[in-house]
Image 1 (tube, rainbow, N blue to C red):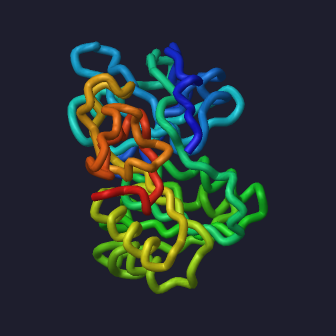
Image 2 (tube, rainbow, N blue to C red):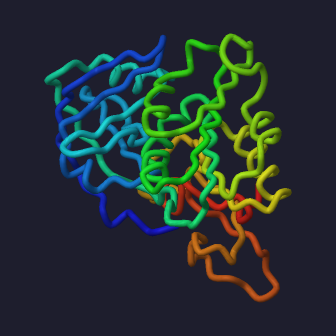
Length: 274
């Protein structure tokens, strides 16, 4: 994955649009030209709640075009609830873009994008970038129920083929999105974001079928810049994303812990050592 932290900065933005996409799902569009121009697929920001009474929270950069950048998030607690109450004209400070995102520069012609729940927020920029290059892009999108399938038309408008699943069968096929992926014709590459059980299943399918897969891991970040080491995942020491410290020991473990916020959030499936 490319190293992208050098593009990060502090951005004083203004909310220019607020959308409620579903119960408990909000999108904020920001006037943020520098953030929009610097953001790459799969990156995120640390959004600072205006009251400053709670810590910043990590949110994926959902859209980035022209002077506009948007954040799509599910209400999961105090911080996201405060952000959800912002209205047009309100200020919002964010730090970013952060993290190493998706590498869309492969030669794969048939691409599967797998999104579960809030993971949809991390994959729109990737889908748009791949579709612009005339790739076949299939979006495998799963949620608990039909109400939580949000903005699917945005992906269809970008040129994606939609494969939708819901746990209760209220939209698309009933069952897990990974089951739909396993049944489908084999893609050349996989890009995925969602809850850890889903990503583990995607990794298993990818490794067993020898498909290169990039997984964006979901985690709660304490700092977002790698200082606290509170969001680690084991990876192969030979990975290009493995930290250079602690230094390898002769005869030592071939596994090292990488920070999801810093070395990730996107990792190659075959290099993860879950």
